Image (cartoon, rainbow, N blue to C red; front, side):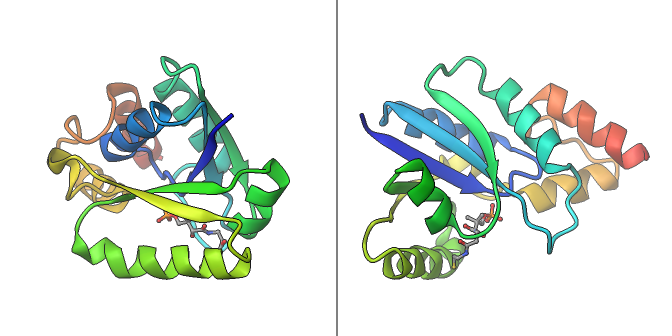
Length: 160
Ligand code: PNS
């Protein structure tokens, strides 16, 4: 059974992430979307909220499961006995950061965790969770960036 992990912050999930999830789910028997519980960051949504949002957004994809993890990706992947991480590459600006993480993970895991990259579909190439939050904070239209129910949740959060 071919399984892969798609790790990320997903704060919040965007159409770019969902595009990667949909395409990766067609390549593996099981895709585990894993939300990083990063204590160093102050997210808009809690880990539990992000997991629930992702579950709702991927409910039509039966081989996608959603979880959270803390600590190192290689430790989590080893616990799950998964050897492939999936990441999306938007533009060349992502490349250096992603290459560094992928190489470090391969080194630290002694070759047990490899990373594959899916190039983000062009219409989502400039989309990021941070820009979605910024656009929403200034009252801009995020309907092209995230599913409607996510847009509603973002607006609710920002209202405080
Ligand atoms: O969506 P993001 O914030 O770009 O995702 C980054 C993520 C979660 C893939 C990366 O920060 C990660 O895997 N963090 C877990 C800690 C870890 O394993 N660090 C070593 C890699 S250099």
